[in-house]
Length: 146
Image (cartoon, rainbow, N blue to C red; front, side, top):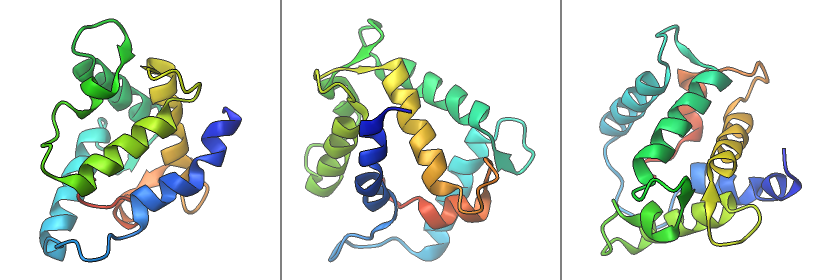
């Protein structure tokens, strides 16, 4: 894993876990239901844990969905395209996440940079170090809305 990804870990942890002061929060029931749905979508074999392979597969699929011009490079515009411009908090979080993924800081995110970021997310979420993400770890570490 690249060194700059590791240095970005603290920033990522803040993006994933730290609540935003003053932001209206959805009910805990709604948040947990949304997180459980996200988890189930990533857990493609339905065994109750997310493996590195499942996370890589989801990240690859998502990358291809966001790569609108199919050049296998993400621009900030492609990465932001599905986000409403009137939500400044989510927009800032998304821009920060793009900057963390752009390991070589060339303004483009490759598929490998996108997947490497997913590996870092997995390391941060895996509280017990077993290289698998259980629903409780996922619910604890992922902030909603992203």
